Image 1 (cartoon, rainbow, N blue to C red):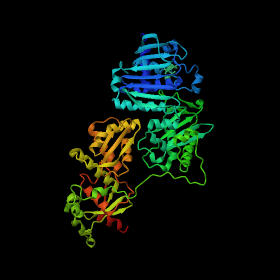
Image 2 (image 1 turned 45 degrees about the vertical axis):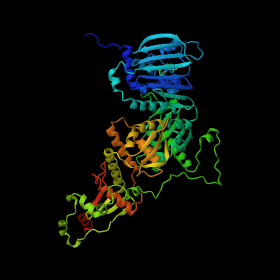
Image 3 (image 1 turned 90 degrees about the horizontal axis):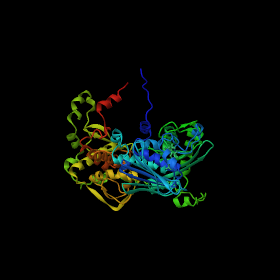
Image 4 (image 1 turned 30 degrees about the vertical axis):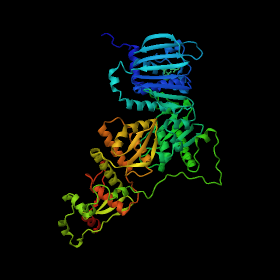
Length: 606
Ligand code: ADP
Ligand code: MG
Protein backbone atom coordinates (compact mmCIF):
# COMPACT_ATOMS: atom_id res chain seq x y z
CA UNK A 1 0.00 0.00 0.00
CA UNK A 2 1.35 3.40 -0.87
CA UNK A 3 2.09 6.02 1.81
CA UNK A 4 -0.69 8.45 2.39
CA UNK A 5 0.67 11.01 4.88
CA UNK A 6 1.83 14.29 3.41
CA UNK A 7 2.95 17.62 4.84
CA UNK A 8 0.31 20.31 4.53
CA UNK A 9 1.30 23.29 2.41
CA UNK A 10 2.07 26.38 4.50
CA UNK A 11 -1.02 28.23 3.33
CA UNK A 12 -3.31 25.51 4.71
CA UNK A 13 -1.26 25.06 7.89
CA UNK A 14 -1.55 28.81 8.45
CA UNK A 15 -5.28 28.77 7.90
CA UNK A 16 -5.61 26.02 10.48
CA UNK A 17 -3.47 27.97 12.94
CA UNK A 18 -5.57 31.06 12.19
CA UNK A 19 -8.64 29.16 13.34
CA UNK A 20 -7.22 29.17 16.85
CA UNK A 21 -5.79 32.67 16.99
CA UNK A 22 -8.09 34.70 14.73
CA UNK A 23 -11.76 34.11 15.41
CA UNK A 24 -13.10 37.54 14.48
CA UNK A 25 -11.91 41.05 13.64
CA UNK A 26 -11.39 41.75 17.33
CA UNK A 27 -8.79 38.98 17.62
CA UNK A 28 -6.83 40.45 14.69
CA UNK A 29 -7.00 43.85 16.36
CA UNK A 30 -5.66 42.41 19.60
CA UNK A 31 -2.67 40.80 17.88
CA UNK A 32 -1.83 43.92 15.88
CA UNK A 33 -2.12 46.22 18.90
CA UNK A 34 0.04 43.89 20.97
CA UNK A 35 2.69 43.86 18.28
CA UNK A 36 2.67 47.68 18.31
CA UNK A 37 3.09 47.69 22.09
CA UNK A 38 5.93 45.16 21.80
CA UNK A 39 7.55 47.45 19.21
CA UNK A 40 7.69 50.15 21.94
CA UNK A 41 5.30 52.50 20.20
CA UNK A 42 4.19 55.59 22.13
CA UNK A 43 1.28 56.38 19.79
CA UNK A 44 -1.04 53.68 18.41
CA UNK A 45 -3.87 54.47 16.00
CA UNK A 46 -6.68 52.12 15.09
CA UNK A 47 -8.90 52.69 12.05
CA UNK A 48 -11.87 50.45 11.31
CA UNK A 49 -14.73 50.04 8.91
CA UNK A 50 -17.75 47.89 9.73
CA UNK A 51 -16.25 46.75 13.02
CA UNK A 52 -13.15 45.59 11.20
CA UNK A 53 -15.00 43.14 8.99
CA UNK A 54 -14.00 44.96 5.79
CA UNK A 55 -11.12 47.11 7.02
CA UNK A 56 -8.93 47.13 10.10
CA UNK A 57 -5.70 49.10 10.37
CA UNK A 58 -3.23 49.60 13.20
CA UNK A 59 -0.58 52.29 12.83
CA UNK A 60 2.28 52.64 15.30
CA UNK A 61 5.39 54.76 15.75
CA UNK A 62 7.43 51.87 17.14
CA UNK A 63 10.75 50.41 16.03
CA UNK A 64 9.61 49.42 12.55
CA UNK A 65 11.08 46.49 10.60
CA UNK A 66 13.92 46.05 8.15
CA UNK A 67 13.12 44.79 4.66
CA UNK A 68 14.10 41.22 5.54
CA UNK A 69 12.23 41.24 8.84
CA UNK A 70 9.15 42.62 7.11
CA UNK A 71 9.15 39.64 4.75
CA UNK A 72 9.90 37.15 7.54
CA UNK A 73 7.25 38.51 9.89
CA UNK A 74 4.55 36.68 7.88
CA UNK A 75 6.22 33.28 8.22
CA UNK A 76 4.83 30.91 10.81
CA UNK A 77 6.97 30.56 13.96
CA UNK A 78 8.85 33.69 12.89
CA UNK A 79 9.44 35.90 15.91
CA UNK A 80 12.05 38.33 17.16
CA UNK A 81 10.92 37.83 20.74
CA UNK A 82 12.18 34.37 21.55
CA UNK A 83 15.18 32.31 20.50
CA UNK A 84 15.65 29.56 23.11
CA UNK A 85 13.16 27.38 24.94
CA UNK A 86 14.40 28.74 28.28
CA UNK A 87 13.28 32.20 27.28
CA UNK A 88 9.69 30.96 27.28
CA UNK A 89 9.82 31.44 31.02
CA UNK A 90 11.15 34.97 31.08
CA UNK A 91 8.77 36.54 28.58
CA UNK A 92 8.29 40.27 28.91
CA UNK A 93 6.61 40.84 25.53
CA UNK A 94 2.98 40.21 24.60
CA UNK A 95 3.82 38.01 21.64
CA UNK A 96 6.31 35.15 21.38
CA UNK A 97 4.64 32.43 19.32
CA UNK A 98 5.31 34.09 15.98
CA UNK A 99 2.04 33.04 14.45
CA UNK A 100 -0.25 36.06 14.53
CA UNK A 101 0.84 37.77 11.33
CA UNK A 102 1.09 34.44 9.50
CA UNK A 103 -2.43 33.59 10.63
CA UNK A 104 -3.91 36.95 9.67
CA UNK A 105 -2.22 36.87 6.25
CA UNK A 106 -3.67 33.40 5.65
CA UNK A 107 -7.26 34.58 6.02
CA UNK A 108 -7.28 38.15 4.66
CA UNK A 109 -5.74 40.69 2.32
CA UNK A 110 -2.96 42.39 4.24
CA UNK A 111 -0.97 45.51 3.46
CA UNK A 112 2.14 46.19 5.52
CA UNK A 113 4.12 49.41 5.46
CA UNK A 114 7.07 49.66 7.78
CA UNK A 115 10.24 51.66 8.24
CA UNK A 116 12.90 51.32 10.90
CA UNK A 117 13.25 54.63 12.68
CA UNK A 118 16.86 55.15 11.48
CA UNK A 119 16.35 53.94 7.89
CA UNK A 120 15.64 56.34 5.03
CA UNK A 121 13.13 54.25 3.16
CA UNK A 122 10.58 51.67 4.17
CA UNK A 123 9.08 48.47 2.82
CA UNK A 124 5.62 47.76 1.54
CA UNK A 125 4.28 44.22 1.30
CA UNK A 126 0.88 43.12 0.03
CA UNK A 127 -0.01 39.55 0.93
CA UNK A 128 -3.24 37.63 0.30
CA UNK A 129 -4.03 34.08 1.42
CA UNK A 130 -0.37 33.70 2.55
CA UNK A 131 0.83 34.65 -0.92
CA UNK A 132 3.07 37.68 -1.44
CA UNK A 133 1.46 39.86 -4.13
CA UNK A 134 3.96 42.73 -4.11
CA UNK A 135 7.01 43.76 -2.13
CA UNK A 136 8.66 47.10 -2.82
CA UNK A 137 10.43 50.01 -1.15
CA UNK A 138 8.15 52.85 -0.10
CA UNK A 139 8.07 56.17 1.70
CA UNK A 140 6.35 55.81 5.05
CA UNK A 141 6.69 57.32 8.53
CA UNK A 142 8.97 55.55 11.02
CA UNK A 143 7.08 52.64 12.56
CA UNK A 144 4.60 50.15 11.18
CA UNK A 145 1.16 50.23 9.61
CA UNK A 146 -0.74 47.02 8.97
CA UNK A 147 -4.09 47.09 7.16
CA UNK A 148 -6.25 43.97 7.12
CA UNK A 149 -8.96 43.93 4.48
CA UNK A 150 -11.94 41.59 4.09
CA UNK A 151 -11.16 39.17 6.87
CA UNK A 152 -12.09 35.58 5.94
CA UNK A 153 -12.74 36.63 2.31
CA UNK A 154 -11.29 33.27 1.29
CA UNK A 155 -13.20 31.27 3.91
CA UNK A 156 -16.91 31.94 3.21
CA UNK A 157 -18.04 29.64 6.00
CA UNK A 158 -16.11 31.60 8.60
CA UNK A 159 -17.09 34.92 7.12
CA UNK A 160 -20.74 33.92 7.44
CA UNK A 161 -20.15 33.18 11.11
CA UNK A 162 -19.28 36.80 11.80
CA UNK A 163 -21.98 38.61 13.74
CA UNK A 164 -23.69 41.91 12.96
CA UNK A 165 -21.55 45.03 12.98
CA UNK A 166 -22.79 46.21 16.43
CA UNK A 167 -21.93 42.85 17.97
CA UNK A 168 -18.52 42.65 16.31
CA UNK A 169 -17.90 46.24 17.32
CA UNK A 170 -18.57 45.37 20.94
CA UNK A 171 -15.87 42.71 20.70
CA UNK A 172 -13.56 45.27 19.11
CA UNK A 173 -14.14 47.73 21.95
CA UNK A 174 -13.48 45.06 24.53
CA UNK A 175 -10.16 44.03 22.97
CA UNK A 176 -9.14 47.63 22.43
CA UNK A 177 -9.81 48.41 26.08
CA UNK A 178 -7.93 45.35 27.27
CA UNK A 179 -4.79 46.60 25.57
CA UNK A 180 -5.29 50.33 26.17
CA UNK A 181 -6.16 50.15 29.89
CA UNK A 182 -2.87 48.71 31.22
CA UNK A 183 -0.81 51.03 29.00
CA UNK A 184 -1.63 54.61 29.98
CA UNK A 185 1.93 55.52 28.95
CA UNK A 186 0.88 54.98 25.32
CA UNK A 187 -1.56 57.28 23.49
CA UNK A 188 -4.33 55.44 21.63
CA UNK A 189 -7.00 56.55 19.18
CA UNK A 190 -9.77 54.54 17.57
CA UNK A 191 -11.79 55.61 14.55
CA UNK A 192 -14.78 53.67 13.32
CA UNK A 193 -16.52 54.43 10.01
CA UNK A 194 -14.95 57.88 10.01
CA UNK A 195 -15.94 58.72 13.58
CA UNK A 196 -13.47 59.19 16.41
CA UNK A 197 -14.57 56.78 19.13
CA UNK A 198 -11.58 57.00 21.47
CA UNK A 199 -8.80 59.50 21.90
CA UNK A 200 -6.81 58.42 24.93
CA UNK A 201 -3.95 60.72 25.87
CA UNK A 202 -0.92 59.62 27.86
CA UNK A 203 -1.62 59.74 31.60
CA UNK A 204 -1.80 57.57 34.69
CA UNK A 205 -3.98 54.50 35.17
CA UNK A 206 -6.77 56.45 36.89
CA UNK A 207 -6.89 58.92 34.02
CA UNK A 208 -6.87 56.11 31.49
CA UNK A 209 -9.81 54.38 33.18
CA UNK A 210 -11.75 57.66 33.18
CA UNK A 211 -10.86 58.34 29.54
CA UNK A 212 -12.24 54.92 28.60
CA UNK A 213 -15.28 54.63 30.87
CA UNK A 214 -16.20 58.26 31.53
CA UNK A 215 -15.09 61.05 33.85
CA UNK A 216 -17.64 60.01 36.46
CA UNK A 217 -15.51 56.97 37.21
CA UNK A 218 -13.05 59.17 39.04
CA UNK A 219 -15.12 59.23 42.21
CA UNK A 220 -15.89 55.53 41.96
CA UNK A 221 -12.34 54.23 42.15
CA UNK A 222 -10.57 53.06 45.26
CA UNK A 223 -6.80 52.66 44.85
CA UNK A 224 -5.20 49.31 45.65
CA UNK A 225 -1.49 48.95 46.24
CA UNK A 226 0.51 46.08 47.66
CA UNK A 227 4.16 45.24 47.17
CA UNK A 228 5.39 41.81 48.18
CA UNK A 229 8.16 39.51 47.05
CA UNK A 230 5.64 37.27 45.31
CA UNK A 231 3.54 39.87 43.52
CA UNK A 232 3.16 43.63 43.21
CA UNK A 233 -0.41 44.81 42.95
CA UNK A 234 -1.54 48.24 41.78
CA UNK A 235 -4.78 49.53 40.37
CA UNK A 236 -8.32 50.23 41.47
CA UNK A 237 -11.48 48.60 42.65
CA UNK A 238 -14.91 50.21 42.21
CA UNK A 239 -16.76 51.38 45.31
CA UNK A 240 -19.46 48.89 46.33
CA UNK A 241 -22.34 51.26 45.55
CA UNK A 242 -21.28 51.29 41.90
CA UNK A 243 -21.20 47.52 41.58
CA UNK A 244 -22.73 46.23 38.36
CA UNK A 245 -25.50 43.77 37.80
CA UNK A 246 -23.55 42.28 34.93
CA UNK A 247 -20.05 40.93 35.12
CA UNK A 248 -18.61 43.73 33.07
CA UNK A 249 -15.74 45.85 34.21
CA UNK A 250 -13.48 43.25 35.72
CA UNK A 251 -9.92 43.48 34.53
CA UNK A 252 -6.84 41.64 35.72
CA UNK A 253 -3.65 42.53 33.96
CA UNK A 254 -0.78 40.21 34.73
CA UNK A 255 2.48 41.76 33.60
CA UNK A 256 0.31 44.17 31.57
CA UNK A 257 -1.52 41.37 29.80
CA UNK A 258 -5.28 41.03 30.18
CA UNK A 259 -6.00 37.71 31.87
CA UNK A 260 -9.22 35.90 32.76
CA UNK A 261 -8.92 34.05 36.02
CA UNK A 262 -11.80 32.70 38.04
CA UNK A 263 -9.65 31.98 41.06
CA UNK A 264 -8.29 35.51 41.33
CA UNK A 265 -11.75 36.91 40.63
CA UNK A 266 -12.94 34.91 43.60
CA UNK A 267 -10.27 36.55 45.76
CA UNK A 268 -11.60 40.01 44.92
CA UNK A 269 -15.25 39.03 45.26
CA UNK A 270 -14.40 37.49 48.60
CA UNK A 271 -12.74 40.69 49.79
CA UNK A 272 -15.94 42.58 49.06
CA UNK A 273 -17.94 39.99 51.00
CA UNK A 274 -21.02 41.55 52.56
CA UNK A 275 -20.39 44.96 51.05
CA UNK A 276 -22.18 43.98 47.87
CA UNK A 277 -25.83 43.09 47.42
CA UNK A 278 -26.23 39.60 45.99
CA UNK A 279 -26.31 39.41 42.22
CA UNK A 280 -24.00 42.34 41.74
CA UNK A 281 -20.38 42.31 40.70
CA UNK A 282 -17.59 44.63 41.74
CA UNK A 283 -15.64 46.55 39.11
CA UNK A 284 -11.89 46.21 39.24
CA UNK A 285 -8.86 47.23 37.25
CA UNK A 286 -5.94 45.45 38.87
CA UNK A 287 -2.39 45.10 37.66
CA UNK A 288 -0.36 42.21 39.02
CA UNK A 289 3.35 42.10 38.45
CA UNK A 290 4.82 38.66 38.85
CA UNK A 291 8.23 37.23 37.97
CA UNK A 292 7.58 35.70 34.50
CA UNK A 293 9.36 32.51 35.58
CA UNK A 294 6.61 31.90 38.15
CA UNK A 295 3.83 31.81 35.58
CA UNK A 296 3.16 30.02 32.31
CA UNK A 297 1.27 32.04 29.73
CA UNK A 298 1.75 29.53 26.97
CA UNK A 299 -1.28 27.42 27.82
CA UNK A 300 -3.83 29.07 25.54
CA UNK A 301 -3.48 30.26 21.90
CA UNK A 302 -4.92 33.71 22.66
CA UNK A 303 -2.89 33.93 25.89
CA UNK A 304 -5.80 35.07 28.04
CA UNK A 305 -5.22 32.37 30.63
CA UNK A 306 -2.16 31.60 32.68
CA UNK A 307 -0.88 28.96 35.04
CA UNK A 308 0.75 30.00 38.29
CA UNK A 309 3.63 28.14 39.84
CA UNK A 310 1.76 28.60 43.11
CA UNK A 311 -1.47 30.54 43.07
CA UNK A 312 -2.42 30.34 46.75
CA UNK A 313 -0.17 33.14 48.02
CA UNK A 314 -1.27 35.34 45.12
CA UNK A 315 -4.89 34.73 46.11
CA UNK A 316 -4.23 35.59 49.74
CA UNK A 317 -2.24 38.74 48.96
CA UNK A 318 -4.81 39.97 46.47
CA UNK A 319 -7.68 39.42 48.86
CA UNK A 320 -5.88 41.19 51.68
CA UNK A 321 -4.89 44.10 49.42
CA UNK A 322 -8.45 44.71 48.26
CA UNK A 323 -9.76 44.41 51.81
CA UNK A 324 -7.23 46.89 53.07
CA UNK A 325 -8.04 49.29 50.24
CA UNK A 326 -11.74 49.17 51.07
CA UNK A 327 -10.98 49.76 54.73
CA UNK A 328 -8.82 52.77 53.95
CA UNK A 329 -11.34 54.21 51.56
CA UNK A 330 -14.03 54.36 54.20
CA UNK A 331 -12.00 56.92 56.16
CA UNK A 332 -9.92 58.63 53.50
CA UNK A 333 -11.20 61.59 51.49
CA UNK A 334 -11.42 61.01 47.74
CA UNK A 335 -8.42 62.19 45.79
CA UNK A 336 -9.14 64.05 42.63
CA UNK A 337 -7.19 64.30 39.41
CA UNK A 338 -5.26 67.49 40.06
CA UNK A 339 -4.17 66.34 43.46
CA UNK A 340 -2.98 63.02 42.23
CA UNK A 341 -1.14 64.46 39.28
CA UNK A 342 0.90 66.76 41.44
CA UNK A 343 1.31 64.08 44.10
CA UNK A 344 -0.13 66.55 46.54
CA UNK A 345 -1.97 63.93 48.51
CA UNK A 346 -3.79 65.52 51.42
CA UNK A 347 -2.45 64.40 54.76
CA UNK A 348 -5.03 63.11 57.14
CA UNK A 349 -5.02 65.35 60.18
CA UNK A 350 -6.51 64.03 63.36
CA UNK A 351 -8.34 67.28 64.11
CA UNK A 352 -10.73 66.94 61.21
CA UNK A 353 -13.12 64.10 60.67
CA UNK A 354 -13.38 63.43 56.96
CA UNK A 355 -16.89 62.96 55.63
CA UNK A 356 -18.16 59.43 55.38
CA UNK A 357 -18.98 58.50 51.81
CA UNK A 358 -22.72 58.20 51.58
CA UNK A 359 -25.49 57.26 49.21
CA UNK A 360 -28.43 59.65 49.17
CA UNK A 361 -31.71 57.92 49.72
CA UNK A 362 -35.02 59.70 50.06
CA UNK A 363 -36.76 57.78 52.84
CA UNK A 364 -40.04 59.53 52.12
CA UNK A 365 -40.18 58.61 48.47
CA UNK A 366 -43.19 56.67 47.41
CA UNK A 367 -43.84 55.68 43.87
CA UNK A 368 -47.59 55.42 44.28
CA UNK A 369 -48.26 58.96 45.27
CA UNK A 370 -48.60 59.93 41.63
CA UNK A 371 -50.61 56.94 40.66
CA UNK A 372 -52.93 57.31 43.59
CA UNK A 373 -54.18 60.68 42.37
CA UNK A 374 -57.78 60.68 41.29
CA UNK A 375 -56.83 62.65 38.23
CA UNK A 376 -55.38 59.64 36.50
CA UNK A 377 -57.63 58.00 33.92
CA UNK A 378 -59.80 55.04 34.90
CA UNK A 379 -59.74 55.82 38.59
CA UNK A 380 -62.28 57.46 40.80
CA UNK A 381 -65.17 55.19 39.91
CA UNK A 382 -67.15 53.84 42.81
CA UNK A 383 -66.19 50.28 41.91
CA UNK A 384 -62.57 51.19 42.17
CA UNK A 385 -62.87 52.41 45.72
CA UNK A 386 -64.58 49.32 46.99
CA UNK A 387 -61.66 47.01 47.57
CA UNK A 388 -63.63 43.96 48.65
CA UNK A 389 -66.07 44.25 45.80
CA UNK A 390 -63.26 44.61 43.32
CA UNK A 391 -61.63 41.45 44.60
CA UNK A 392 -64.87 39.53 44.35
CA UNK A 393 -65.30 40.63 40.75
CA UNK A 394 -61.76 39.92 39.84
CA UNK A 395 -61.03 36.55 41.38
CA UNK A 396 -62.13 33.47 39.56
CA UNK A 397 -64.83 31.40 41.25
CA UNK A 398 -62.49 28.53 42.13
CA UNK A 399 -60.21 30.93 43.87
CA UNK A 400 -63.07 32.27 45.99
CA UNK A 401 -63.47 31.17 49.49
CA UNK A 402 -66.54 28.93 49.49
CA UNK A 403 -68.80 29.10 52.49
CA UNK A 404 -69.89 25.51 51.95
CA UNK A 405 -66.56 24.32 53.23
CA UNK A 406 -66.97 26.20 56.42
CA UNK A 407 -69.64 23.84 57.77
CA UNK A 408 -66.88 21.62 59.06
CA UNK A 409 -65.79 24.48 61.28
CA UNK A 410 -69.11 25.77 62.63
CA UNK A 411 -67.46 27.61 65.42
CA UNK A 412 -65.37 29.70 63.12
CA UNK A 413 -67.85 31.66 61.04
CA UNK A 414 -66.66 35.13 60.42
CA UNK A 415 -66.93 37.79 57.80
CA UNK A 416 -64.06 39.83 56.47
CA UNK A 417 -63.79 43.31 57.88
CA UNK A 418 -65.60 45.90 55.83
CA UNK A 419 -62.80 48.42 56.26
CA UNK A 420 -59.84 48.41 53.89
CA UNK A 421 -57.32 46.45 55.75
CA UNK A 422 -53.71 46.83 54.61
CA UNK A 423 -50.82 46.27 56.91
CA UNK A 424 -47.21 46.31 55.82
CA UNK A 425 -45.15 43.48 57.30
CA UNK A 426 -41.35 43.27 57.31
CA UNK A 427 -41.52 46.46 55.21
CA UNK A 428 -41.79 44.16 52.22
CA UNK A 429 -45.23 42.50 52.17
CA UNK A 430 -48.74 43.84 52.28
CA UNK A 431 -51.06 41.89 54.54
CA UNK A 432 -54.68 42.10 53.41
CA UNK A 433 -57.79 40.06 52.70
CA UNK A 434 -58.49 38.71 49.28
CA UNK A 435 -62.08 37.44 49.23
CA UNK A 436 -62.12 36.62 52.91
CA UNK A 437 -58.76 34.93 52.74
CA UNK A 438 -55.74 36.29 54.45
CA UNK A 439 -53.16 37.20 51.81
CA UNK A 440 -49.64 38.52 51.66
CA UNK A 441 -48.65 40.53 48.63
CA UNK A 442 -44.99 40.95 47.77
CA UNK A 443 -44.79 44.72 47.27
CA UNK A 444 -41.79 44.66 44.95
CA UNK A 445 -43.12 41.84 42.78
CA UNK A 446 -46.54 43.51 42.66
CA UNK A 447 -45.13 46.84 41.57
CA UNK A 448 -42.87 45.21 38.98
CA UNK A 449 -45.89 43.53 37.43
CA UNK A 450 -47.96 46.75 37.56
CA UNK A 451 -45.23 48.73 35.82
CA UNK A 452 -44.61 45.99 33.30
CA UNK A 453 -48.24 45.76 32.23
CA UNK A 454 -48.52 49.53 32.18
CA UNK A 455 -45.52 49.75 29.86
CA UNK A 456 -46.68 46.93 27.63
CA UNK A 457 -50.09 48.62 27.34
CA UNK A 458 -48.32 51.73 26.14
CA UNK A 459 -46.99 49.82 23.15
CA UNK A 460 -50.55 49.66 21.88
CA UNK A 461 -51.97 53.07 22.66
CA UNK A 462 -48.72 55.08 22.66
CA UNK A 463 -50.15 58.04 24.59
CA UNK A 464 -47.79 57.79 27.51
CA UNK A 465 -47.93 60.37 30.27
CA UNK A 466 -44.52 61.82 30.92
CA UNK A 467 -43.31 64.69 33.01
CA UNK A 468 -41.01 67.34 31.75
CA UNK A 469 -37.76 67.52 33.67
CA UNK A 470 -37.27 70.92 35.27
CA UNK A 471 -33.63 70.71 34.35
CA UNK A 472 -32.71 68.33 31.55
CA UNK A 473 -30.65 65.47 32.91
CA UNK A 474 -27.29 65.01 31.25
CA UNK A 475 -26.04 61.46 30.90
CA UNK A 476 -22.38 60.94 30.09
CA UNK A 477 -21.71 57.35 29.20
CA UNK A 478 -18.84 55.07 28.35
CA UNK A 479 -18.61 54.20 24.67
CA UNK A 480 -20.06 50.79 25.34
CA UNK A 481 -22.97 52.15 27.37
CA UNK A 482 -23.54 54.83 24.76
CA UNK A 483 -23.95 52.17 22.09
CA UNK A 484 -26.32 50.26 24.34
CA UNK A 485 -28.33 53.43 24.97
CA UNK A 486 -28.56 54.10 21.23
CA UNK A 487 -30.03 50.66 20.94
CA UNK A 488 -32.79 51.21 23.51
CA UNK A 489 -33.48 54.95 23.09
CA UNK A 490 -36.45 54.39 20.77
CA UNK A 491 -37.95 51.82 23.09
CA UNK A 492 -37.59 54.24 25.98
CA UNK A 493 -39.41 56.92 23.96
CA UNK A 494 -42.30 54.51 23.57
CA UNK A 495 -42.41 54.16 27.34
CA UNK A 496 -42.58 57.88 27.96
CA UNK A 497 -38.95 58.99 28.15
CA UNK A 498 -37.91 61.97 26.07
CA UNK A 499 -34.27 61.12 25.60
CA UNK A 500 -32.01 62.48 22.88
CA UNK A 501 -28.45 62.00 21.78
CA UNK A 502 -26.22 64.85 22.79
CA UNK A 503 -22.83 64.82 21.10
CA UNK A 504 -20.17 62.24 21.76
CA UNK A 505 -21.08 59.56 24.30
CA UNK A 506 -23.84 61.64 25.89
CA UNK A 507 -27.63 61.72 26.07
CA UNK A 508 -29.96 64.31 27.53
CA UNK A 509 -33.18 63.34 29.25
CA UNK A 510 -35.96 65.93 28.88
CA UNK A 511 -38.90 63.99 30.30
CA UNK A 512 -39.60 60.72 32.03
CA UNK A 513 -42.71 58.75 33.06
CA UNK A 514 -44.44 60.01 36.17
CA UNK A 515 -43.59 56.93 38.25
CA UNK A 516 -39.88 57.67 37.99
CA UNK A 517 -38.73 59.40 41.15
CA UNK A 518 -37.30 62.88 40.67
CA UNK A 519 -33.56 62.85 41.10
CA UNK A 520 -33.37 59.15 40.38
CA UNK A 521 -33.67 59.37 36.60
CA UNK A 522 -29.96 59.13 35.96
CA UNK A 523 -29.52 56.17 38.25
CA UNK A 524 -32.43 54.40 36.58
CA UNK A 525 -31.12 54.95 33.06
CA UNK A 526 -27.66 53.75 34.03
CA UNK A 527 -29.20 50.58 35.46
CA UNK A 528 -31.22 50.09 32.28
CA UNK A 529 -28.18 50.46 30.09
CA UNK A 530 -26.33 47.94 32.24
CA UNK A 531 -28.93 45.34 31.35
CA UNK A 532 -28.22 45.89 27.68
CA UNK A 533 -24.45 46.33 27.77
CA UNK A 534 -23.59 42.70 27.28
CA UNK A 535 -26.59 41.72 25.24
CA UNK A 536 -26.54 40.56 21.66
CA UNK A 537 -28.60 42.33 19.01
CA UNK A 538 -32.27 41.46 19.15
CA UNK A 539 -35.24 42.36 16.99
CA UNK A 540 -37.45 45.35 17.72
CA UNK A 541 -40.21 43.41 19.45
CA UNK A 542 -37.77 41.64 21.77
CA UNK A 543 -36.06 44.93 22.44
CA UNK A 544 -39.29 46.62 23.54
CA UNK A 545 -40.17 43.65 25.69
CA UNK A 546 -36.73 43.53 27.29
CA UNK A 547 -36.75 47.27 27.89
CA UNK A 548 -40.17 47.02 29.53
CA UNK A 549 -38.89 44.22 31.80
CA UNK A 550 -35.74 46.04 32.73
CA UNK A 551 -37.59 49.30 33.31
CA UNK A 552 -40.18 47.62 35.52
CA UNK A 553 -37.59 45.83 37.61
CA UNK A 554 -35.38 48.86 38.07
CA UNK A 555 -38.08 51.46 38.67
CA UNK A 556 -40.23 49.40 41.03
CA UNK A 557 -40.60 50.00 44.74
CA UNK A 558 -38.15 47.76 46.53
CA UNK A 559 -38.54 45.42 49.47
CA UNK A 560 -37.67 47.27 52.64
CA UNK A 561 -39.40 50.48 51.62
CA UNK A 562 -42.09 51.73 54.01
CA UNK A 563 -45.50 52.32 52.40
CA UNK A 564 -48.48 54.31 53.65
CA UNK A 565 -51.97 52.86 53.85
CA UNK A 566 -53.02 54.79 50.77
CA UNK A 567 -50.01 53.62 48.80
CA UNK A 568 -50.64 50.00 49.70
CA UNK A 569 -54.26 50.37 48.65
CA UNK A 570 -53.33 51.95 45.32
CA UNK A 571 -50.75 49.27 44.64
CA UNK A 572 -53.22 46.48 45.42
CA UNK A 573 -55.87 48.07 43.23
CA UNK A 574 -53.43 48.50 40.38
CA UNK A 575 -52.34 44.91 40.84
CA UNK A 576 -55.89 43.65 40.50
CA UNK A 577 -56.14 45.61 37.25
CA UNK A 578 -53.30 43.51 35.87
CA UNK A 579 -53.96 40.65 33.51
CA UNK A 580 -51.63 38.49 35.53
CA UNK A 581 -51.71 39.34 39.21
CA UNK A 582 -50.66 36.05 40.78
CA UNK A 583 -47.30 35.86 39.08
CA UNK A 584 -44.93 38.44 37.65
CA UNK A 585 -43.83 38.38 34.02
CA UNK A 586 -40.77 36.58 35.38
CA UNK A 587 -42.84 33.88 36.98
CA UNK A 588 -42.29 35.11 40.53
CA UNK A 589 -45.27 34.62 42.83
CA UNK A 590 -46.87 37.92 43.89
CA UNK A 591 -49.58 36.71 46.26
CA UNK A 592 -49.40 34.10 48.99
CA UNK A 593 -52.75 33.19 50.57
CA UNK A 594 -53.39 31.61 53.90
CA UNK A 595 -56.80 29.91 53.91
CA UNK A 596 -58.87 29.33 57.00
CA UNK A 597 -58.38 25.57 56.63
CA UNK A 598 -54.66 26.02 56.49
CA UNK A 599 -54.77 28.22 59.56
CA UNK A 600 -56.83 25.70 61.49
CA UNK A 601 -54.54 22.89 60.46
CA UNK A 602 -51.57 24.80 61.74
CA UNK A 603 -53.16 25.36 65.12
CA UNK A 604 -54.19 21.75 65.54
CA UNK A 605 -52.85 19.91 68.54
CA UNK A 606 -50.10 17.60 67.38
P1 ADP B 1 5.04 37.46 17.75
O1 ADP B 1 4.44 38.74 18.17
O2 ADP B 1 4.54 36.32 18.55
O3 ADP B 1 6.52 37.51 17.67
P2 ADP B 1 3.77 38.01 15.22
O4 ADP B 1 3.35 37.13 14.13
O5 ADP B 1 2.73 38.80 15.91
O6 ADP B 1 4.54 37.12 16.28
O7 ADP B 1 4.88 38.98 14.71
C1 ADP B 1 6.06 38.45 14.12
C2 ADP B 1 7.21 39.38 14.25
O8 ADP B 1 7.01 40.51 13.41
C3 ADP B 1 7.41 39.96 15.63
O9 ADP B 1 8.20 39.11 16.43
C4 ADP B 1 8.11 41.28 15.33
O10 ADP B 1 9.48 41.09 15.22
C5 ADP B 1 7.57 41.67 13.98
N1 ADP B 1 6.49 42.66 14.08
C6 ADP B 1 5.17 42.44 14.02
N2 ADP B 1 4.47 43.57 14.16
C7 ADP B 1 5.35 44.56 14.33
C8 ADP B 1 5.25 45.98 14.56
N3 ADP B 1 4.07 46.59 14.63
N4 ADP B 1 6.40 46.68 14.69
C9 ADP B 1 7.61 46.06 14.63
N5 ADP B 1 7.76 44.73 14.43
C10 ADP B 1 6.66 43.98 14.29
MG1 MG C 1 2.47 39.23 17.98
